[in-house]
Image (cartoon, rainbow, N blue to C red; front, side, top):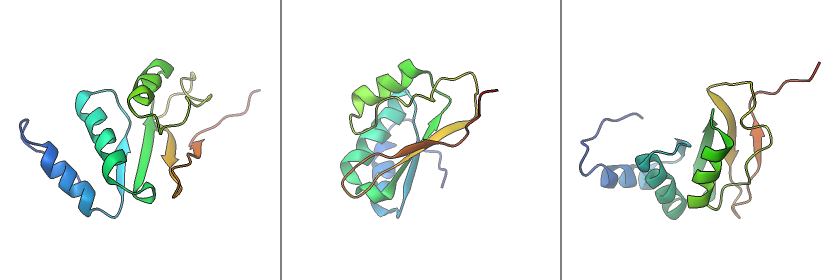
Length: 110
């Protein structure tokens, strides 16, 4: 679901949508709003109801996000390669918050 909310007071409707949703999918990013959404998701949701998409981020950007969200895995080795796709990986969580992650796109060296 995509919604456009007023600049002021958007957090409570987003929080309520997270609580009611069967699955919350977020794309990682460094904006203040995205960082807030990620923190809220970790606080409100059980692990099986959260999926995170890793966009074309630089390693420094991922590390900045991880500093604010320590449940994220270490920066994947495959991140920040010269191969850029819209979504580079997906993170999903087991019931104990273990963190398997895999790239969506891989290549073999020639």
